[in-house]
Length: 278
Image 1 (spheres, rainbow, N blue to C red):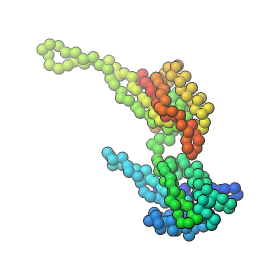
Image 2: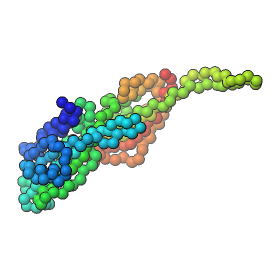
Image 3: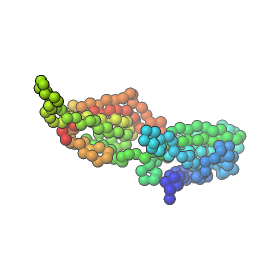
Image 4: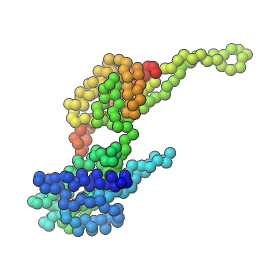
């Protein structure tokens, strides 16, 4: 089975399992070939509604310097119908599940969904596509990212940022100190090695936790590490171990936020470490 088919099947299965009360949320769920938008809307109008089409659209623009491909992207089209009014197709009514409800339930189910073992879905944008009289169609676009690491970095055996946060570890340069001197009338410079100096290591990313109380506890634990200044071993997301590290600074970047889909508490941050020896 190809990677594209694996992704499509995982999304289709997830949508088929969604329920509203004791009934299925969607009457029709299927993978669909990307084609002219008018043809897609016409095809959805002939389905049992509410319906969802899962459409794989290709890859986005990749990294240009080394010519690497970008992340796969797929669209989910949602359609609802009311024989009474356009408003019911949008907001819902008696025996009608509106497209607003469909979009919220589908986004909650697909956001951060793991497909193909390691890839993860991230909602990029969504919009209304209109539709025929009494029908409303909604489009959601998802980027499918493959993370470069699967484990959270640790400091002293503890995942300081939590297990669900986005953390990027950047290793600074390892520099060797030296003393240089020369003699009058003698070509060249003499150098005396003085050993390696501290290597800067930075964690950058976003703290993501269930609520503000949990985020308060994580921030307090990080600040306590800064105050203590103890040397500990850091293990980065790729399993590399860095001994004799000290946490020097904790910086919050911008104000706290709340995730629009999950309600998680968010805080952009930066942690600065010094590795005192090798």
